[in-house]
Amino acid sequence: MSDPSTESEPVGIWTHGFAEGAGGVRLHYTEARPEGDLDSAPLAILLHGFPEFWWSWRLQIPALAAAGYWVVAPDLRGYNLSDAPSDVQDYSMDLLTEDVQRLIAHFGREQAVIVGHDWGGAVAWQFAMDYPASVERLVVMNAPHPERMAEAFGSKINFRQIGRSWYMFVFQIPKLPERWLATNDYERVGWALRDSAAHPEAFPPEVLQEYRRAAARNGLTGPLHFYRAAVRAAAQESRTRLGKRFVGLAQALDSVLGSAPAESTEFPVISAPTLLLWGERDTALGKELTEGMDNLFSGPFEITYLPDCGHWVQQEGAEDVNRLMLEFLERYREN
Image 1 (cartoon, rainbow, N blue to C red):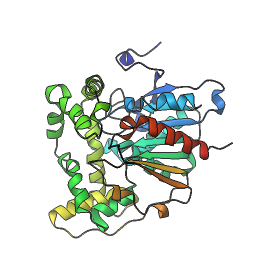
Image 2 (tube, one colour):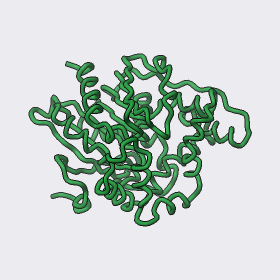
Image 3 (cartoon, one colour):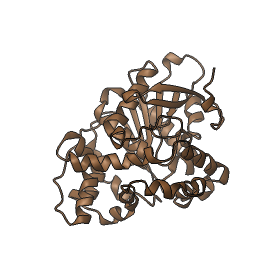
């Protein structure tokens, strides 16, 4: 029997389910199974960004399932039908990556293909570093590796990128960003997607309405806590392993306040075959964040730029993204 809460979700080839994440948080996911033997189908987990929900992968789910993948696209904690804890500490990166690990276990697997965009990409990067044995292949879209972000915000400060990231600092203000985004039935959520896209036609009114509906379900306190937890972790624990993940954000705050920048940090190298897809017309993240990355990987690393796409690359350039992703996954598919 289906959960009544899923009845208003967009309809497609997917079905809905729920799994238990870290700390007992209930995570909603959509699932699309391939034809044939499920036991031999690679599990692919797709992690969305802000201010989206699982539906940002609507153009990839059918393509992956048709190619033989068992596709799972969750709502990250705080979003849409997943639980939205109220405390900032409930959105620490340790909990976000544990959610992914628990999803893999929920489906009876030890490994998965991990695909992430924006904040989902940040989680994907860290998951590949924290749980290397659990990542079969990694695909990240328009999300900088945390070491590059740390450099841009601190040890190799990039004032242009800090300017692009103004919203991260605004999001630290309690309650005000939630109220501003909620105005007129979350109209500004739609604007944030459409107005920052290289191809606004990728976000017609009916698509924006789905994003507004999903944002209204839980409000946006949980999603905004992703940013708040990141900055607090850096400020409070900048010399610990957890703090190193976000030290760049803390360094940026230090720079704004005139303090001395903190020391540079090191991150574990990623062993899984990795593809980074990058829409070059991203207004929030500069292309320079993708330069000189080879030393961050011990396994194969590929990067492909999409010159005519913006930040929302999997929706603006779905045909190219699907082709490039599937070609990469096939190149490094285990027999």
